[in-house]
Image (cartoon, rainbow, N blue to C red; front, side, top):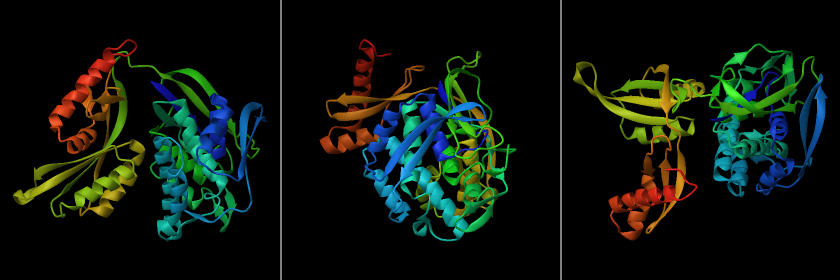
Length: 397
């Protein structure tokens, strides 16, 4: 499996990520091409090769015009939504800025809609965030893992005066993320860097067993007693010899038993769970004490999102506690086939390891309503057309 490992041994910021992405193999023109899809003006990207304590690295600077309009989360969302970027890049970029806004809102005790982005709302931050997300999209890594984060120490000067490191917003953003001893003083993890890495990375920990294809170094702005660089290691993970066919991962499981909540609330809760990074959500009927009918709520989560999702469940439901644990799971790799049927286009999930074909139900339902053809016929047609597609030369059944 193609994997990108973000080694944040000297922290992480948006410009360091951009530099490392360029150094690991993304052409500068390709990055600019992606950013041009944002329809944003008033900036220039400068790229240079520098040395940080003897380590060669790529340094990226975003030179933005000084006068920029004030921006709130809605403004930034609109800029991204109205762009021509791939949908996955749009969605991930908006999640990064939403995290930043939520952290700032909590720190300042205001609503998310009232958060005024200062440095974050400027053009350079838009370029850092969207450029980094687009860069990982271009790399086409199936999995992104990051090292534990060194937050730094001392104080940092910002709009509110001197604050201890990490800055309050950064501290909010790294909740639930493994931290490590810092190699030096000063701010090593910026709010933008924290929002990016906690959104992009599925897990935090040591580098997995992998065959390295390439690595790239991105330089930070400051000169420190150690090499102030971030590196991205690109490679292919080595399969477990006992389980050659299956991908293995660690997954978080959060559970709560509930017998006193309006069941209509579960639909709203499900939306919040997925927005917060949950992987799956389901409820199971159970009988509780005194034979009261109840519900066991189960949420599957990346390990680094378990704490945030547990807080969400405690806030939005009537339960007074959540159970949390991690388990290993094996899963078959799959991709989406764009299949043309006599009734319209249907996405079909396909696993080459198991041969499983699963048409997207929502697409089949939409076509059934539109054409009047029975749903089961459209569903079966999508599977049959997918089989025909996979039998063609060059495709794999």
